[in-house]
Length: 359
Length: 211
Image (cartoon, rainbow over all chains, first blue to last red; front, side):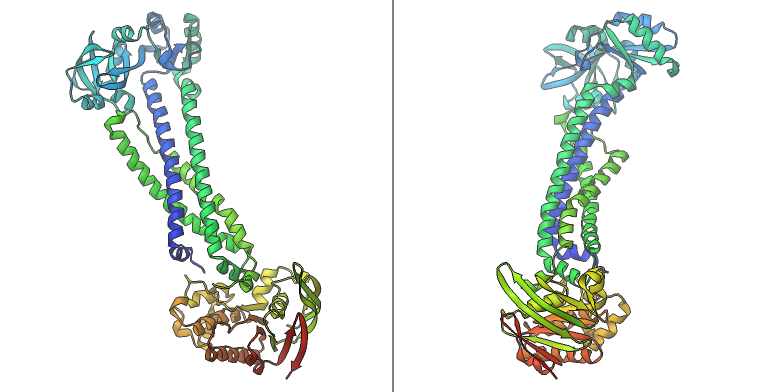
């Protein structure tokens, strides 16, 4: 029985090139998927905190541009089945010396969602900082947001990178800063089964608004679709580049080993056996490349997460599902990339052994 | 296996290589095809061994045409062995593994290597043994499935005269045991070992001599 490992060891240089080409492609797929997935999951997690139903301005493409009347919080809170209503202003502004930082104006009842590590929740003219930005700004007592001074009242720790690298203030201050009443209303329900009825009532109460369950909002949110589509396109390009790399390298490998495949044909080994042999060689490389790419991607994500430059906003995560998907993609890449050169190898005419010299 | 070729003609492009060949190879015989370079001996050997289809004419193996033989890979594996001028041993496999690549029954490998005097080299790679030893390993690979006939194209082209004669001796020995050999070579010493000598010239059979 021929051992594919021996063949790979013998053709070390080309094996290494195929391995590197696959590793780079797989790592690219891992990183783009993990980072885009991380952005979506962080923002989703933020919206899901205390929010079974989300209300935004009708027809708005991005929650940052949404403006909704927060005076309707009380009537909504009094509706049957509603546990709590919170309001959020989502914005971004320069925080000296950082060029852009996520700023969140939140209603008072949402302060409890932030796990304070020091100080207290903000009053008027005050803010609390996520631990990441607090470290980046080197423990400030005051900060300048769009040239307006705020006192730092406390520091909180959040697993959501957007929040941990952001600034939280009261709704009044947020409204003054971004000139709006609220970006979104988040509604927690006592009974999820009543969400359809409540959505109907809220939409009647707020004709300029649009209420949806948070899950259905996340599924249909345009920004997430753009992020996901971009990630899929870049991932597909990396996949195709990987296949092209394998095809070109394997073609060279087959050409170098023409004598080997010719002799296999002459001694009666079937085309299927030769194809299987080459496929098994690239599958071994694919598994190794997948493993190394996984490790490299975890390392890169860790570095990005802790890089001050990104303020914790880029927080990719390689989930088990992503791991399984990329494994399937890696194997597919190896199989597709090898198939054509393998078919060519299986068709090498043993006559070439007679017609050409050298082994 | 008796091989009968009738009215064989072959062209490479416009070049008329074989110009009408009628020959019979007896089962278990040692046949030498000799001639100068360009005489058509390699083309004839390629056609007789199923590697090449003739432009015109037919070849029958025990009365069957190639199309009647079924799967050609299976036919070759069970009935035909090949020895080439260049040994074509796979460099990342040991001599034993090279033979095993072709073997239908691996238990026959070690006795055969012993018979060919290379059993002590079984675990070595082709670049660790001499040219003569490599060619013996290639012969072992050709013989491992006890083929009915072995085709050899210039099998001693890369060997010194001592190793070349050693290879002919081996062919003769196995031929006596029932394996047919069809060997194409420009080496006239081959004629001393063969039962039948087919001399080629300009794509035609110039003479057939039988011992």
